[in-house]
Image 1 (cartoon, rainbow, N blue to C red):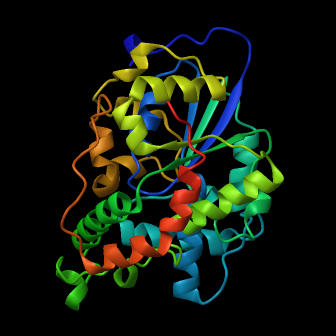
Image 2 (tube, one colour; image 1 turned 135 degrees about the horizontal axis):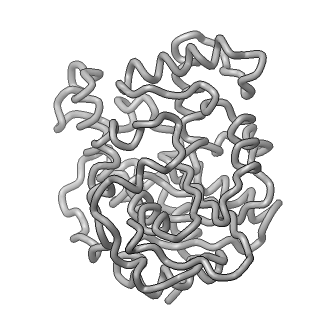
Length: 310
């Protein structure tokens, strides 16, 4: 990766959170930006807090505490429950909201980039754990693209893990809203929208929004505009990066091997080396994708209207 790193001239620092929905090219964008020299990358810290809390509630019938200290037994049990399902080892100290807030606020990198999903904060009672000193930005993509791709990825993952039975075990009758235990009621978009609205009303009245298909269609223009707005150094070398997974090993995540273990979600981005043009819009949609997309289209459209235009 060293040959692809962009210089980090100047003394300024920049701390940025990119909130997104699944399947929006966010991991590829993270891999791209991780090539910036002195970049400290954190992968989905709040999403794994959300997953741990949801899994613990479903198994134990109780809310998972937001702090690790004093609640070690509960949080460690949550880590074991999620790890047993996903076959990846998680660090309990990185599954508590208060711990993540503290970790991000104490990050020492010249540049800090956090890639996360709105669902990690979408419940509302967790907004108090948003770290101070960060610019909040948002990555969206058309709901049909995201939900259709997410359906394929979750079916593949849950099938691989042996978690599906009956109708759910058949890809034709699998229903992402019914059979994905992590799928939130707002289909990820409402949760992202809620974070966006909170940021606009309480932190920054005009946060940066980028659309994934704009990024894929005009990567140089969108990336240059994004970096300029964030205070990240930009060079055209960022448009081509190493296809290996070596750079991913330095990312801070809920577990040392999260990215490499969950290939169904991160596999394409792991092997990527550049942004490819947008794929053809899917023409065969299952009823669950149609239903969920219609439910959230209004949230997407409102955010789309405020996106960076290049």
